[in-house]
Length: 83
Length: 145
Image (cartoon, rainbow over all chains, first blue to last red; front, side, top):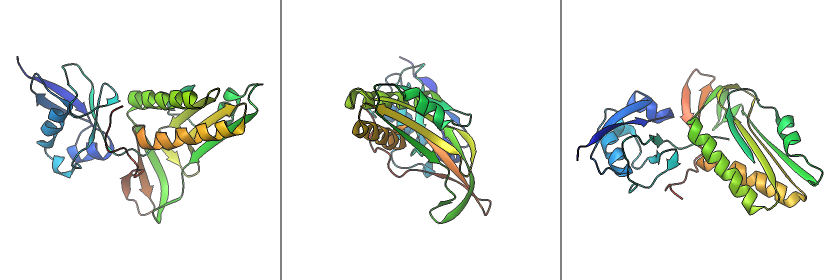
């Protein structure tokens, strides 16, 4: 099966260091949330991300083992600051 | 239960009215406001940015948890985003219950969980012109439930 490309939403400081609120990554067909992180790490500026940023798939926090499929909404979640 | 991420000024009194009911002998209102000093730096304004659909979903999950932990509690919460000035309310929580202990506990639960889990970020504007994203220092290290 072919891989696919997916947009990844990034916010706040992560958007600043990656230079955009949305980045696009290439994933294998059997991708997981962990593969998304690995692909993001190859982007310019990603050396300023923390070792294990949180990731959300379809607006829920996701484990690194969670599958990511074409059409899923994927986001990196910086340390939150609500309140 | 009602939670919302909004861009307009908050009206704490409206949320208090919303949870009031004849059976509820106690109502607790929590209002979080923009503080003028953080980590010894003078703050002049700040902006809140949210991943709005996920923030609303996570906030609603927290409110449902509160209503299942404290049977009979009614709790609502609004969090504001966009640019806020000193003294503006950034978050309002109103909790009501026939008895005060559950109302206090539910309101406290919602603000503490919100600060750990709801994807909202804050950028402080300092008197010297600097801008910086700040965090609550309490984010869960591992995600899923």
